[in-house]
Image (cartoon, rainbow, N blue to C red; front, top):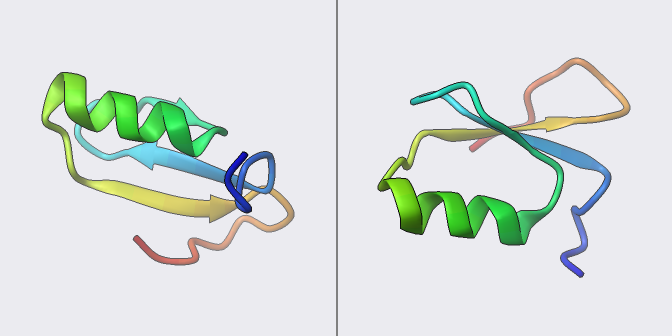
Length: 50
């Protein structure tokens, strides 16, 4: 399990998909070629970077 799992929501800016597991983010990147993903804390509405 990745340290950010269940604490971060990754959002793909290419297709608006949302992920809570980093392994799903990696799979999504590999399957779609999308690379514009941002991380958002589940505890706050602030974006915490890419």
